[in-house]
Length: 120
Image 1: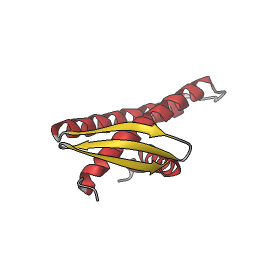
Image 2: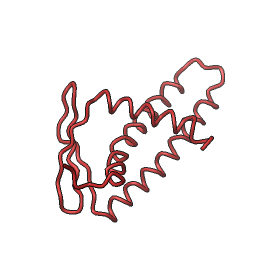
Image 3: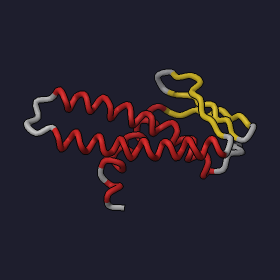
């Protein structure tokens, strides 16, 4: 049983996912820049703009976590699972995440940030 409300758990998970998305997009920027695209600038602009929005959201997440005495730390990882320690207002909880679930959530968030955030 978790003592962390769903809202705050979502924030803690954002602190896991958003840095992963930034890492992926940074690699993608390098790949696009070295690619043989005839017109690279639109792709680079899309990725860079998306990264700026994610960085702003991540800063908001970190600010909220600091104000509410929340932290997340990666404890261990194997082929199937990654374990995180959630520190929440003096409580500690360990949460195990199935790696394909993490990948799927990151992919879902990337789709949102790249395409769907403009229409919401």
